Image (cartoon, rainbow, N blue to C red; front, side):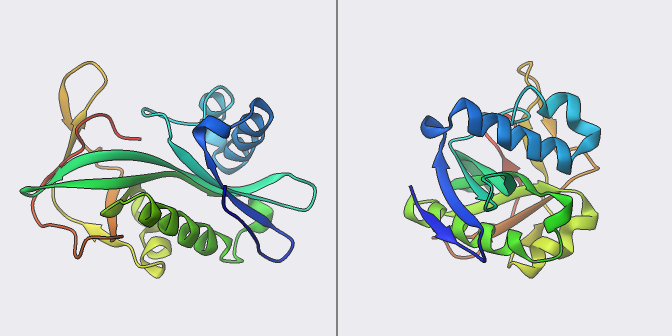
Length: 186
């Protein structure tokens, strides 16, 4: 488990197999604080559609989870290529810690972890108003169509309310063409 200190904040990579019930509850509490409209969902579960393989979590001195993200590992089809990706989701910083670029450090650790796990690229979905935050960290908007499983076995596309963003990890530029997530989104 990788742990770093950042101004009295501990940042750790936590494999899903080491996610304790107490830490799970603490992460869900942070997600509820960050996404109050989704409080009902996050009070029961940390992911939307695909369980995580690992998370990067920042805790304050009191052990409170103050920021984090999760990652889903998957092989997708991008253009004509198969890519091993780290699908990044649930990126959050509780309100009183926002504006300090803490998420930049968390994202760097996540991309280092993705590199150590042999991922070609990172892929995330966000609302258009967050594009500038991720662009600051090196992510680029993906303009192709993203196709996925809708959970009932039918194929669907990424909802219009979200945009896709990519970042190279071990591969060069993200391939042009459409993307098939080979499963559900995260």
